[in-house]
Structure formats: C-alpha cells, structure tokens
Image 1 (cartoon, rainbow over the protein chains, first blue to last red):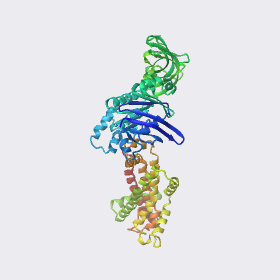
Image 2 (cartoon, chains in turn brown, orange):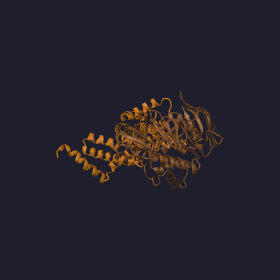
Image 3 (cartoon, rainbow over the protein chains, first blue to last red):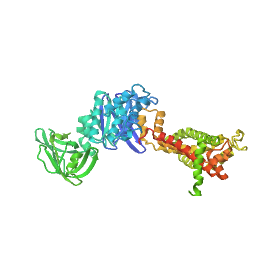
Image 4 (tube, chains in turn blue, brown):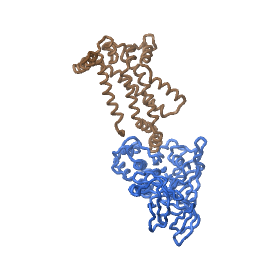
Length: 353
Length: 236
C-alpha cells in the first residue's frame, strides 16, 4: 500500500474547486494530520484516497500502482483501506452485524466472533455485540465505526474529523486508540482535523490545507510552528491565540494576545507565538482564589453546552475562552448565562508553538 | 337486543359455525381467495422490488414521468384493471385464444396489475429515502455493487414490507376486477369478496357477514406475519 504518492491532484465539483494541484507523499507507518478550516478540502482528499471518487486531474499511487488507471481492482485496493466518516452512520442492526459487515462482504467465515470482539475491544466496547446500533450514544457509535474500519486489518486508515462534536471522554478514547493503531499495528493513518491541539498531540506529520491548496507539509512540530498564526486564525480550534511573547525569567514568558490580556506560559520562546490552553485545564471559580496558577482572568458566561457527562462553557474574558467542567461542578457553582466567573490556569498548561 | 343487530350476531355465530364444521364450500372459497391474492402479490413482489430498487438507485431520463405514472396506477380502480384484463382475454381480444377468461389465472393477472404498482411505488420511495451516506459507508467497507444494493434494500426493509402489506390489502379486498374477469362462478372462481356481494344480493345477510368476518380474520393473520417481518431485528 505505502508509499502513497499524491500527484498534482485536482478535484472540481461543477464550478467549485475542492482541491487544487495537491502533491503529497505518505510513507508506511506515517500518522499524517491534515489540518485546515471547514471547506478546505480535507474530506475531498480523504474520499479520493478511499477511491470513492475520481480526481478531475492528477493521480494517486499506492505502492506505485496508479489508482486512476486500474478499473477492475479498485475494489481490491479499497478493501485494504478503512475509513471513518465524520458523521457516524451505522446500519440499522446489531453492533455485531455492523462490525462483522466488512468481513462478510469479503467472504470471511473463520473466527468471525473472535475478530468482531477483538475489534470492539480495541475501541473499548467489549460486550457491546448484542446492543442495537441505533441505541448507542454519539461517542459509542463513532467508536463502533472505528471498529468497523479496523476489523478487516486495513493497511491504510482514513479518519475524517473522527472526534468532532464528541464529548472529551470519547475524544480521548478515540485519540488513544488511533495512537495505538499507528504504533502497535503499524497502520498508516491519514487524519483530517480542524483541531490543532489534536494534530500536535498525535500526528507525526502535518499537512495544512487552505481553500483546496496545500499550504505546508512536513514534520508535525515544524509545520505547526511555521504556520501557527495561520492555524490560530482558523478560529475553529478552541482557546488558540497568537501574540507576542516576552521572557519574564528563564522558562517563563508573558504573551500579549491583545485586548489587554497577557497570558503567562512556561516557555523559552520569544516573539511571535501561538498559545493553546486545553478547555479541561482551566479551573473555574466564582470568587478569586489564591493558588499557584499563574493566570487568572475574569469573565462572563456567554454559552452553556451540554456534553453528556460534562458541560462546556463559553466565557467572554476580553477574548472568548472555552472551559469544560463536570456536571457536578456546574451544578455546585450554580452557573447561569451571565454569571461572573474567574478562570485560573497554570503557566505549564499553556502550550506554546 | 333490537332487530337491527340480529343479522350481525347471527353472522358471528354463522361464521364460527362455518369455520368449525369445516364447511367445504366456504373452505374452497377461502383457499381460492388465498391462492389468487397470494400468487398475485408474490408475483408483484418478485417484479416490483428489484424494479423499484433499480429505479430508486439510478438516475435516468424520464424517471419523474415514470414515477408519476406508477403513482397514478397505485390508485387504479380495480374495475378499470378488470375491464382491461377482460378486453385482453375475451374471445375477440389479443389473448383470447388462451381461453383464460373466467379462470383463476385471469383473476391473478387482474390482481397483479393492481398490486405491482403499489409494490413498485412504495419500494422506490423506501429505497430512495435510505440515507445517501449508507452508500459510501458500504462501498468504503468493501462491498461490491451487488452487496451494496442488498445492503440498501435491507436498510429499506420496513418500507419494502409495508409495500407488500399494502399490495396484499388491495388485492384481497378488491371485488370489481375478480368479478369481471372471474365471473363469480360457484366452486370455480368465487372468492370471499364476490361471495359477499352475491349473498348480500340474495338477502342472506348473516352468511355475507360471516364471510366478511372470515375475510378480516385472514387479512389479520397475514398482516400479523408480515408485521413481525417488518419489525424483526429493528430498533423498537
């Protein structure tokens, strides 16, 4: 399967250009994150890689096999590729039948039960076989789709925003499963995401797509650093701000992110930087607290989003911040829209690129 | 009890009596009814489901016009279907030499013309309303074209079984077409609906009611089985 060579790939729908002259090489075992805002062409690129669509021009080579010139063996190639779509859709039947489906269409009869339960175990859903697929929560359903894509042991795994709209617990299960698949099973993975923190955390390589054009590609840390401002401007990634860093003392910098907000971060970087704070790393209090946290901001709750076991708060503290807290904390603090609260986070919780 | 209710009560007792005493004429009428409507609906299913799937899953010139025609035929008055088959099979008609008029075969043909558009039309709509993402999903998981079609049909199962239920209901309850092409001949082409008409005309209301109850019972049992099929394996 690998290496995968994408050469001058262009895809147009009627008059809109979804992808324009994209060239990219993916090596065996890579975990490539494709980052970019909505509508950048990420999904189109994955659909072309899954051979669900034909390019308008250019070509894709899997291990030197030109996928545009073979007609008869597209199925054979496609059967080595797993794909998880952004919207988790499952067949209207049991979890078992859903996960067994890819094996059944391949005519696999041996050890069906065992392979289905292994795949479910991989995504942390052991014992879910008899559950009906349409009674699952959003996170469970997405994990079943990952089990479906892994049960036939693909050589290449394509993931289209697999954690969009999921609660933090399911996000972390899916992220750690992806890492496990890549490290232990050595499966090549292409992950489309608009979440830069996710790309930084799990990808080895990053490609930045913008309006169908490949803006940057290479080693994850380098690319994210080089295009940090561009990435922060997507706005899609939560709690990402760009600004100027001044060193306060060795290993601690103060970053001016505008609107009279300075964030202290544990870094040695100076000059233009982008900072990220994970929504789970921010402590919310109704009155100022004396603590070791270097950052304290005051703001108002402008949005409350229910995430199953947790609650996501949108807080205006000059800039918009997202905070995720447990339901119990949410109720104990008696928060409402318009509540005045304090945000506290440590300098070491601030990631700097 | 007022006199007005007497025929109904009498009909109930009569129906029970006819059933338990295994009245040979009633049983032959029941069996013929089941045979004619059953075969007509099975044929309609065999033709209608694959055709419906084909129409729903393909785009072609004239698809809308075809569906308008099918939807119109879904409401085809049985008498009109009967008239059409009568003209086809009558001695001077194009299929006259086959001498099928006034036989159960003629009745099956007439009910097939009533049932097929219903199976076809409802199947097209059921298959057409399956989430388009299912297609990509099945292909991505390695399905062949044929496996993809079968997967989509399975997703549309509830709607497809509904089409069979509706077609069976239309076939077993119609009277106009079987009357015209079957002739309501005793021991030969008399089915439950035509027998009810006949007994009512004779003023034998209790027998007519008894036959009506038997017809309802048959419809209930068959629909019970089909409904089980419709819901099996689906989320409740």
